[in-house]
Image (cartoon, rainbow, N blue to C red; front, side, top):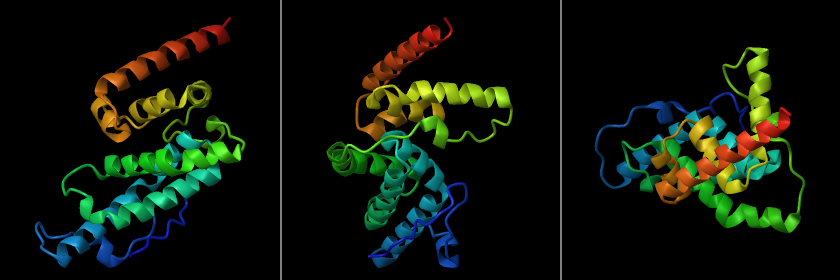
Length: 200
């Protein structure tokens, strides 16, 4: 099995070989197809490591667990490279893998360990928010989002931070679009209520 080292500074792409950067021909068969898929997945991982880590932290609220989630996502994505459909959105495919790992493996471990949590606003950064007042507002919003139930928190992050459509969020989380709309509506109501109480 091929492996990918996910030792990365989160704001830069992981290094890739010249072979990985090569553009694959349109069609392959047999082993050539598997090699082409793995190259696509490696390139996709390199381009999306920061997004994967941000989502992993929103789920786990722990730096070390976010690192583990991303590492496991890298490994699983490479193991299942042949399942990636050429021409589809690799970022959504990777986010769905990460979410599946979280549900099936890591969340149960966190519950057993009962380990402490970190503040999302202390870890997540917002690219392009140079103005101090906007950064303060973003941090305030993230603190409110961090207090939401997990299902609402993940939907808010994917829809409003990552900018995915309701349908894309539903595909990643494996639920109907109506469920996403309900979660976001409930989250907006709670955020509005929390902000209203904070301004009194």
